[in-house]
Image (cartoon, rainbow, N blue to C red; front, side):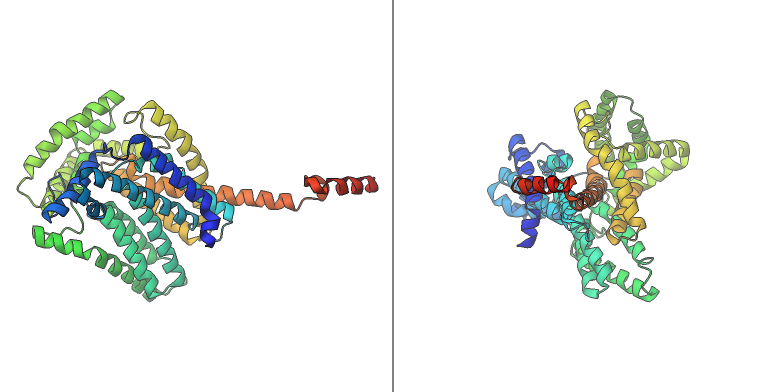
Length: 437
């Protein structure tokens, strides 16, 4: 197969890096807080035939439902299968990244794939029972399908793109902001489409996406008698970010103070908030938290503005926050992210300006992520990595690979006496030089 011959090195590197990381940390270790919930959901669905929702908010269904088949072997089997799934999703992401920069050279595509294969945060996330690996693969696949739909302008391709976007939302509901941005973009480009065609294609995309998540939405309606597209939790995350707690968290001056506030969140604030909404359904809980946050914003407009700016600075910084992470993690992230930003941001912007469809889609994902999760919600770096860092790495590597290919091409066109000859050609080369002199 041609694609395997062309991308075997990035695929092998991505596979080896994830297997090694999981082996070192332990295939059966489940030390990520969200992981306990996902394992509990998988076991409960398998044994009790119901979807548990005993957390502060309901977990989105796609990832834990993928873990259910392993529940026959117990909790450890679910953890091991989750990490196998993360490895498979990571390898798929590497392959998709190589197809992301269409029209580029093979070296550019391989370098783009290597940035996903070697991304230290993606490799580390693969050791968790969490959605990052699966979501990254779904994001890249959905963007590739959307690009194909825009280029082909066929109804079937838009239905396929909507399916990919719907699966993204079922894995991470924050992807709804990305889908909204892509739908808005379809109404404005490409310019060759008539207004009627844009509306019809955007409608097909929305219809397909809606039908993908509809079974779960109907389930929520039957279960809770309330409309919840996928899951609640948005109201709580908005409240944690836009409240006195959010202001204190973003103003924390040291790692010790930040950790103290995190302990306060899990041991005091969240139990208190849960008591306040114990008798409410998921949709009503979201409305309750949203109302409390809007009241706080009205009474503290200056604090809201300052807190939002601090949150954006932390979210968009090309290294992880020294308050939330160790100094070692800060340096490791800076060594990876600073070059990524320096090369990736200009490369992505330049391709978007040149009307590159994929670059424009990627730029929309970056903007929608920063403007929603980054600015207004209580979120961590792991929400940014697939939507921002991975895309910047792909386009930055494609730029470097294209330049490298150009240099090599120019090198091959240089005059013979400037090109190092192969060993078997040296005698003839020396004879020609003696004859010329």
